[in-house]
Amino acid sequence: MNNRRDDPLFIAYMRSFEASVTHAGACLDCQEERPCAVGDPIHTEFTALQDAWTERARAEGKKP
Image 1 (cartoon, rainbow, N blue to C red):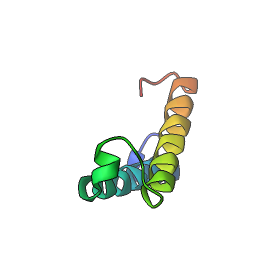
Image 2 (cartoon, rainbow, N blue to C red):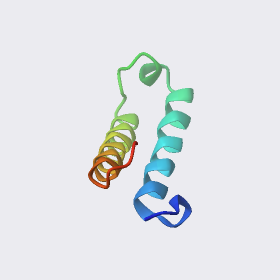
Image 3 (tube, rainbow, N blue to C red):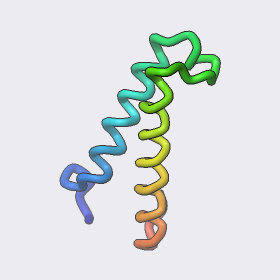
């Protein structure tokens, strides 16, 4: 996909990034890299989507 605005994976990745940083910004445990029960699945989803997007970009010969 050439246009990131139309790329569902990229959109999900960016939304999960926003959720992760928003949560971490308000959670002292997560700021100390000790994900809390609420933050852990948020951060895990972000990492999984980031990995998927990076893997796809590399497979397409693009620089992530």
